Length: 241
Image 1 (cartoon, rainbow, N blue to C red):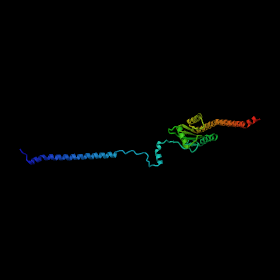
Image 2: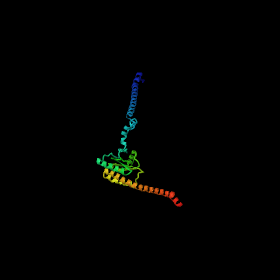
Image 3: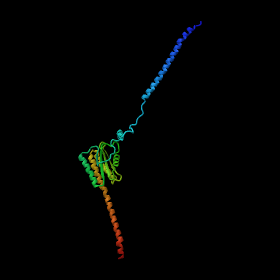
Image 4: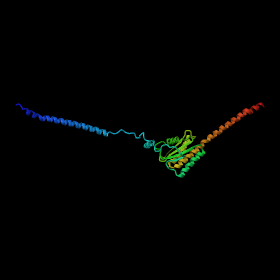
């Protein structure tokens, strides 16, 4: 039996429509995938972390940069001395300040040495002697100047002395010992007065050998001059007689 053309066309119409429907569905799916991928890329771009910025802008003023960097600087950097006593820790009473000043004045009056005293709360991990040396160099102290730095919270101290100071190592060690016990007992004023008195005694003792040597040299020169006078003027006359 041969099918009519109309029946043949009717049998194949659902298949053609189904194929067209699947094409539309596939295209829509492809569009959806593209849109999803685009949206995901956009979200990734938005949530991407920004590059780290420098902590201090080069356009900031020096004062602002110093303020921003204060957290990495020591709390008590070396200082430039403006007085023979600097009480940055506020541990001296008025009477104690006068005692320290008097001891330092006696040292300056009775020897060629001078001493400066600084009180701070902490060296912030810096070696006490290094802190004292840095402050002495920054202040332009000379070979006859000493600096005693005392940290009241740390219970530490550093004595800065020039390598050409007229004191021996043993004398400097004795001065250290005179300060150590006072600092340990939190006797802040005696730490300075004892140090000044020890330096004064050591300075006086150091001057005595120099005085003896000077007298000896002067005596030798006088004897040499007398010998020359005798040889030049007295002896020739005696020979002629």
